[in-house]
Image (cartoon, rainbow, N blue to C red; front, top):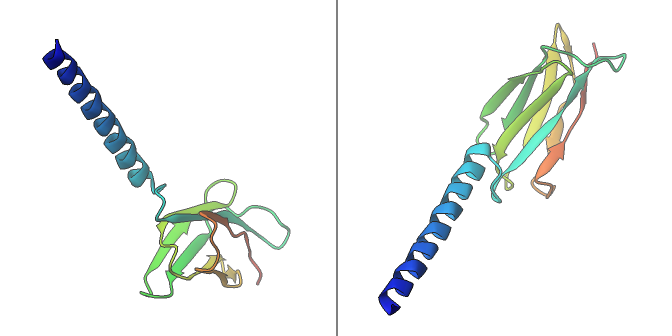
Length: 121
């Protein structure tokens, strides 16, 4: 009886460990773990209309690596897996128009930051 109870307890512990490991793997794949952050926003034109097809560039100021995103239907963009210890510069360009460069600071402790960009000539 004691051996059977021990086996059940071991099986329960193993099941909990496996579920936790799987949940952690899914969160890391989505970029939602506690050590990263995301940046999202909308690109609009001078008339505040969303711009589809604008190129949004995100520059890591520590490594100088640049990532790009082409805006979707409502002018939205999204970057994930960003280090909270780095400043990032973000700007948008579309058909000769560009936005001012904005900075996502390492002092900004939001895990989900929002920076909207407005194009001008």
